[in-house]
Length: 111
Length: 114
Figure 1 (cartoon, helix red, strand yellow):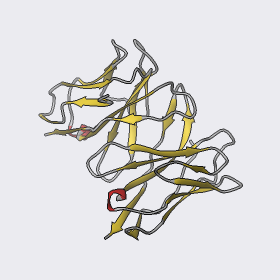
Figure 2 (cartoon, chains in turn yellow, green):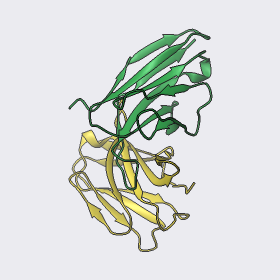
Figure 3 (cartoon, helix red, strand yellow):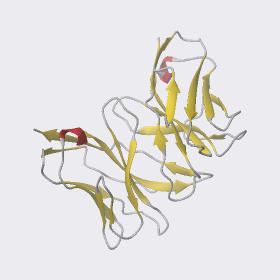
Figure 4 (tube, rainbow over the protein chains, first blue to last red):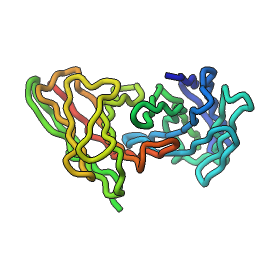
């Protein structure tokens, strides 16, 4: 399975942009890049996904490097509610699309 | 829509006891999944189902059984609980299982085995 590497933790201030990096140097041409986040004591929730082009939605933006070996999740204006563990995941198709979770990045937002 | 719900929210078992965790979804999703999350770790896939009446093994299936008798429900069973099965269990569902496909997660069941 293709693996991702993320920093264990990051810290930012409220109302500032946050850039969460992810390395995936062994990504294959058909792997989608997914981001999920897990708020304290909750199940993971979908944030965004992409294949080759940068993507935007109401929650965040995803910037994908041209060689696809890395990507960055961008929260444009962090709020206290964005404090969570963020997981960068590559899809694995084996009977179903399986999400292989690493340890993720724990994001702390300072007021 | 309630989304994905899980029953119970908390449970304490003694070693050797059995129990069933229930997952229900009201989004008419074909695919359903069971994960476990140990402290400080990411989620690991236990079993999954690609449709009513089907089940398949995930990454860590030993000690668990599952059944999908109805499309909206996915049951996870522990026949003889062990302390190593102390964990938080999450259920998820997705529309098709194809790529890309968003998984929707339930709130989790916290299980302690003494």
